[in-house]
Amino acid sequence: MRKLFLCVTVVALLLVPVLLGQKQKVGAASAARVARGKYLVEQVGLCGDCHTPRNEKGELVKEQWLKGATLDFKPIAPVPVWADKAVNIAGLPGWEKDAAIRFMMTGIAANQLPARPPMPRYRFNEPDAEAIVAYLKSLEPGNKPINHEVH
Image (cartoon, rainbow, N blue to C red; front, side, top):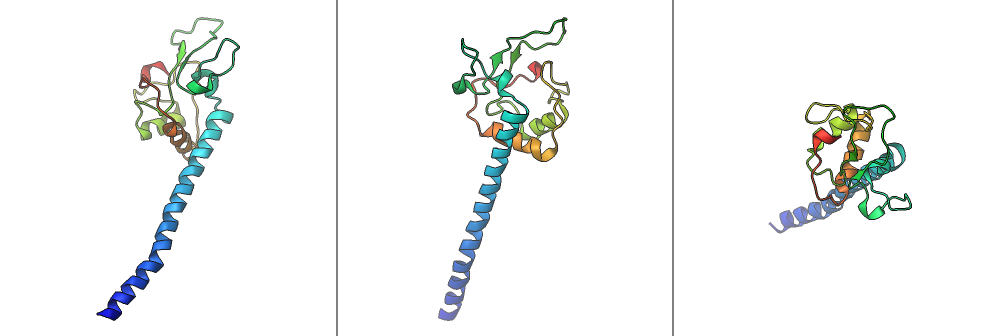
């Protein structure tokens, strides 16, 4: 009996670092995915340019990062579905993860409608779309859920 207990204890002690290592790898993968999403949002999609309000000097208000803003530009010719406001995307309130990933890949929202101009119809690949959604979901949510009609 004592030998069995000793064997179980040794196996358990050997497995603990392996299992903890797996959790660290998952955590590192998640952190890497969020970092990739942050890069794509800030440097590729330039989402903050429209989805973050600006102060009187025209500078982005970092405390309101991606929490929605009134657009300060309009088309030269009338566009019937033009969105005057960029919605809150911090935390992706109102979005299911899979629908948000699909939107980043196709430009089609959960209501089966394309994004309203001036929002581009992004065509990110699946890993990049997942990274973007992971980053946006990691942000502190704004107050109001996204209205899928207002993209």
